[in-house]
Figure 1: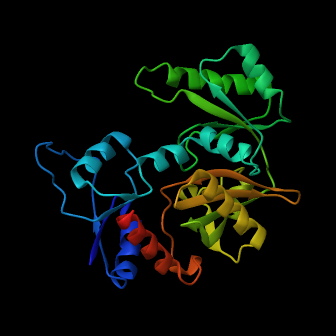
Figure 2: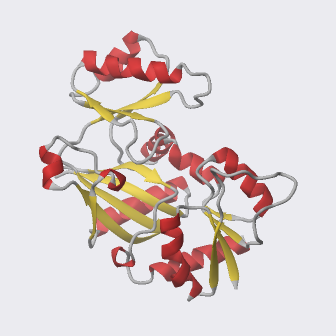
Length: 287
């Protein structure tokens, strides 16, 4: 039986264990953070494949060295997907539709920041380049508010231990439907539509992140949106990928991607999802 080292959250680990065991893959949970690890001996059992490279890159390096396994989504895949500007630049150059976006490397001059803001019809979305779950994402409705947000980012970026001092300024698509689409080894395997409860919208909430209270409902995604997500995964060359789409009446764009997506309830995936995932894990072992 193939042994899989799972370095994702407990929720994903628990959902994987039984379906993969039925396909002769034994799943073990590997804790890589918020612990101590003596470097003279591995605390981990023996495994054949890792799933997926740990989110904390420094701790992931230690686990990678000690486990010595190939990963479904390796270090490069995690870093590529986490860098939102990198993703949008690669996709845009490949002809995949993305939101209009300006990447800012801080500190930038007021003149450059003003020019970036004035490219858009306000409000604009301001988001850190490498956070997840909607952390730090906000909107600015006028130039003074935008420059004030940047002032706060300056305070954070001034701390010398902060590695990423970039952020994005992006067009706001207020009426867009928000979809998380899952792609495994280049093929569509399921999707959810993320939406806020009515009372949250009435209070002015607009972020559709599930970790911030949004609902995620499975649906039968249209073929053109499936193809768009598959195209994004192919361009990025990431075998296990969550692709976030924003869809309006006029267009659909790839907004972000996630190379460490949470595995949801089985009802939100196509028939054969677990077979496809097991096949990807086995292919990773033999690569």
